Image 1 (cartoon, helix red, strand yellow):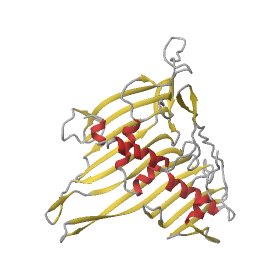
Image 2: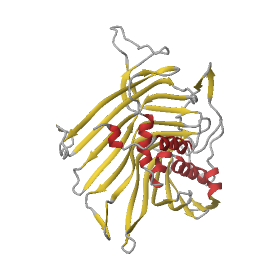
Image 3: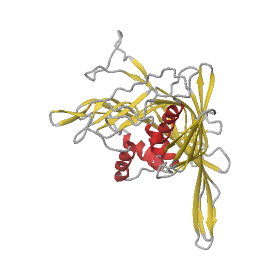
Image 4: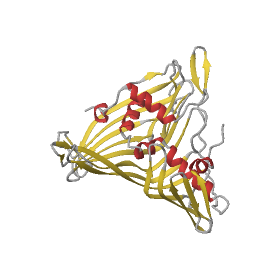
Length: 385
């Protein structure tokens, strides 16, 4: 089975809509012209993260940085706005079908590994059958400084590897996931697109960890990998005469992912490293027997360790983020209590952020400050480039 079928791609119009969703808004053009063809000037991703001491003078600004990353990161938004189907659209939007030269410069390289199936131990390879305990299908693609615009500029660089997975080893559940990975080892090329060879005329290999897409309206950068997952119940449910299936849980997770997004010119947030990321949405179903209508309410929880240039980070200087009662409406209004524990030189510095409608109360345990939601988010607004 091809990865496309596993991912159930949406129509092209939905994919185009997702690009707008990723960008969040449109900005000034970052393209320059090379004759009639538009060329993107790729932004430099500044991954510098220094140590920052949290104090009574900056704790609300640092809390704003954490909140900005959570709410502006498109991948996380897909979870708490229940739009994980769009994640599969994103995968298909950026996938590469075959090796080719880009329209202006650079190359696109693709490899279809094919479906692989494994036994209950998850490692012993088996012939694929309908009841295979674990199925994986991987497409590997690489943009090599690819300027691919025709009407508008598009730039691709790095690996965008996608793996679709179906796991039925847990009794009563069918666990599905899509992993995006920028990690690979591959030959290198010079500025002319020619392979770089060693003294034996063998390709010089390099370890890659990053993927960078950019257009006039969107910057999408990540390094390492992250995973979208949906776990389905295998038990059919009924509401009156109607039969339906339930999702046990869904979400986003990663051991380590670095991320930054923008509008093609400016960043939505600073480059941020997230480790031990787990954002989970748990649905609860209610059946109205009279109308045979099923309604779904979700509860959310977030845990991760976060670091960026605004709030600081590095060895023993990161920020542990927990939001066990997380709720953010489609309108962007949050509720619940976000707790941040930053590792200062002298010990942990704890900040709590309580959301109540348009009011945000931030406290370090000794002093408190109140902001409107817009004021709180504006504290961490990235400087225009």
